[in-house]
Image 1: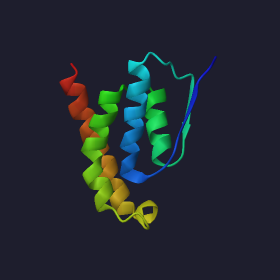
Image 2: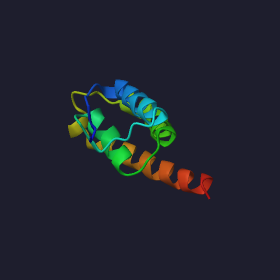
Image 3: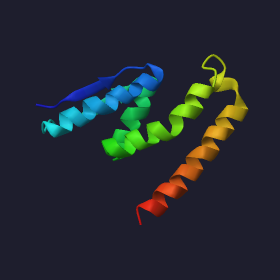
Length: 101
C-alpha cells in the first residue's frame, strides 16, 4: 500500500505540517507521495528535497519574523520584500553549511 500526504495552506500555521510528518516518521509510516497548497507546498518541497523535520523547523523559525512582517495582500508584488527574503535565504544557507561541517 502506498501512502500520499496532502498538505493545506495557512501561512505560518503551516509549521503544523512539519509536526504531522514527524509523527508519521516516529510511527514508521513511510510517505510515498506528498503534495500541498500554499505553505503546504513549501513543506512538501522541503520534504521531497530530503530535509528532515528539525531542519524544516529551523527554516520556519528563521523566516517566520520576515514572513509575518510582509503584508500578505501585497507580498507577491512587493519586490523589496522578496529581495530581502532571498538575501536572508542566502545568509541562512551559508550559516547552515558552516554549522554542518
